[in-house]
Image (cartoon, rainbow over all chains, first blue to last red; front, side):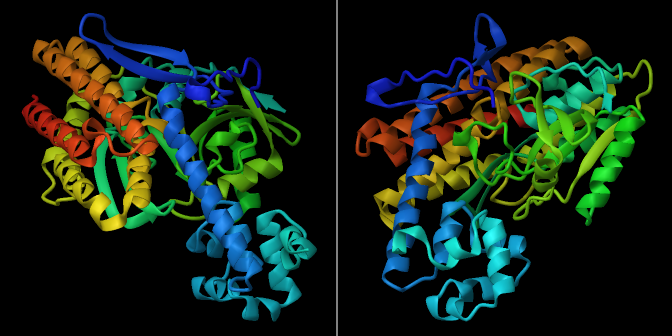
Length: 137
Length: 333
């Protein structure tokens, strides 16, 4: 990763982390079109941050549901790696309706070890972490 | 071990940048805007029934892969495109092509790319980059988003090439093999402009082209009432992210397209294109203003000059402007 010279100055007390210099195009009536290689426009940090806040929010909701026994850890870990059901189903090579079923805690408890290990490898965790997540211990 | 002498250059947009870099390597000196223009990359579509990250899809470009396909086809360049089912087979084919001395373009998913900055870690399957060599398990990558050349190991590369979900790359690899000498790019430019003009104003379907921008404006006015402030703000943020963040060099490719029109007016020797390029540049600046005001709206809701109605009015304005530009461009000879 290109980490030299990370800029951390942000407007209005916000931390902006940009590691990467990208190319942008500009236009000016006198000078015409130009290209610059620069850090991300700070105005855009707001919308990047918004998408991460939304992801955090969804993750919190999923965690609360799992704690209350309304959903299985699959629902939590799916939010954690920012996936949705169709994408997760493609990764674990199961039909979508089965993945949706596995998000309920009842059917999840009856899953075979083979299916569990498929989920675990997609989420990048061990089977033990999947069946018994840290926040429930 | 193969390491080709591949010149790394950054670009505003990954696919047209890759196309330019590959064609330049084979001795065809075109710029990124021209590659983008010939490939007819500019577009607009708003697809509310297709959700991406829990919000409607807004796209400012054509289908992934089309820029390379069209550019090479129109210029008479012979190129090969492969997709695979078996990841192992795709890697051995990649090694084989590199050994023959061709740098290879790859379509990949960005989520597992190890060299990407952490805040860009999203499931986006339409990224493009060039492999120009390998040594053992390490592959040498030229990615137009990155400032420097990067490397990636076999396992990671296999994973990003076989990312799943919408627009899954399926190990797609493409490379030009034969680039003719002394190509006349003028007819190709004319064809590219005509195609883009048709895409933007000639398709009788409400969700695409200039009509699509108007449709989005109409929808935007109702968001707050129908969805509530939280979700409306998230939907707006999604439009802005597609416009500014996803490798478009800003303003949903409108800057690149303006630069293309400027270059085209010189190459074709048609001064009226220059005027349209200025118009396009102003239009792009208006889009950028839209994204600036929109991001203020996402931050603090409620100010009258950043309301959804106000933003929708800007969209109507750019829609009218783009319609005018592309109706004029459709008459190009």
